Image (spheres, one colour):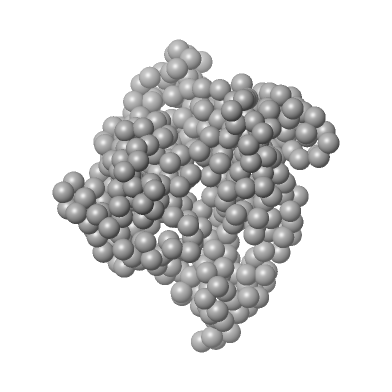
Length: 207
Length: 207
């Protein structure tokens, strides 16, 4: 990353980028901070501050150039850098993530799936093959891929995490709703979909 | 919600709760703010402040009672209140979310799936049936369910969102990586898995 951005600023920039992607597809040339602000329900001053922090300058009454702004965000957040990852667990969620073609637009390339189910091993999800989990150490050694997307059932998540870390994984994007305990130097991003939904409910006061 | 919590505090409380769930299963009776702090890499003072804000008091050298703390968080965040939702799109992601049995532990009950694919209509994911999307208005009228989990392909997400809003949906948990434009009074939570991963990459400086 080229800028020293806070975690919250990164979250907002990825949201701005999603809008810019939509606008590019619709061939819309310009966007104002007010448009971004109203789509995301974020204060307009905040939007302007964020864009100024990455050296984007809007034009009075015209706004920002969509393509230029999109390009700057992609550069700042390193979207163009390819990040190779392995999916652990070839169930519905692992399959959904592997088939999510949009990932590649953002530099995420899923190289392989790993599972312990002999019925799944050898199958292909699109172009991505499912391998036996017990071959992952060799795979990591040969390819250098060290990011894993963990989609196993909750009850085996810690055990599988221990195993893949021992095999060479350094970064885990964890979809199992459990907090993994990992050694120093290993990084975990806890996705926890349930937590995400509960935040939605709590924030929107859904009862 | 019983307390006036910030969005960030809600996020942290849901994370604490995930740990407490794990501890309950392992039959561990007490937890310290230092343990929570080190598992989540959150400042210990922040943890103590959060727990104080929901009236949880730890005991010196013993920490917090796991069951009691879990119970208080569930109460504050309304986990025990049943929230009924419909899944739109019976693809891999919709199927994964519908089969995610853990959702029900947090008060989320997925009542039905909706799709336009005649091969999928009539199928069952566990106990949950897939219905024709064109019957959703009637379903909402009969049941009052007004939360939708949108898992359609990106390119039809806006069109489908318009349709289900017209049919009576008020809250959308959107998994399509696009920012939906919705009328006033309709609430959207943009999940955007790609954005989530990119934040992970940016924060951890994965290159």
